[in-house]
Image 1 (cartoon, helix red, strand yellow):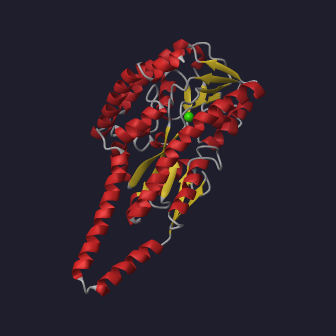
Image 2 (cartoon, rainbow, N blue to C red; image 1 turned 90 degrees about the vertical axis):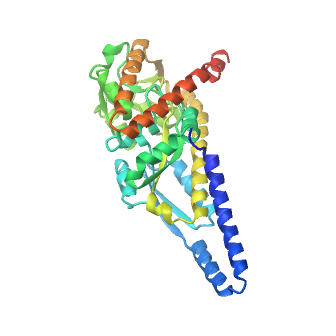
Length: 377
Ligand code: CA
């Protein structure tokens, strides 16, 4: 079982207090070591006064509600809590580097921080998708539970360590929608040859089911749909999709989001930049991220429901459920794809095992918890 974040924070605070206490005792014993105390005070004062100016690059279009605005809010909190000592400037996709250049730029230290989703980096770390979302996998709150209290975050750190990156949970968009389709999907036959923007493992499943999966950042989705480069696209859910205007370029809005049942976002920090931060700023940064992680899920949950109503009532969007045979096929292929994806090395196998065991426990529990309740509400 992994160590919870709560335990992690307490340990850090306690280590910090112990160090401080040890210093006080040490210099009290020195008695006449006033010069030395002065030097330490001076050092502390310098570290307290130093302003760390960081760049946070994101994979999101500028000011995109939820995904794009959350890191901006997080940076504001860090500035306020640190009295301006950690000053984080947030950049949208393309302002400093393209969306899919975020991982490398932070890994190499060209920016200290990044915000995106782990499944974008499947080309480098195939197993990374498991830290974002897995088709027919964990729901948002279950994902938080696995990452923070089920050993997931420790495994994530292990997977990113060779890239000099330290990951933190950076939000969750909740249950997504299956997406916008310009062709009605009546059976699996309608998926054949369909060109759809769909990233991660979901994309691979879609491809094996006979579709054509295309990966592109959010900023390009609208134009690709409008010009017919793609026939379908998934993005997030009602709240974000309405912001991108997808209802004006897509005819049918399908559910459920089988491919992304609770997509975790990530904050990545360059390990050297992290190591340079004084302990209190590290704690502030982690705490602000933790707040962002939960706040984003709360925001998406509340606003998805409002935006769905707007899409249907004001824009006449046709909402449809994917046919059972399509979902059944996606589900069967998903099991195979997720398993195969985890066979490349020892760490990937461990990550898969941890996730699969957690999911099995959760499925048994949810049958008598949320699932049972929602069915009778
Ligand atoms: Ca998505």
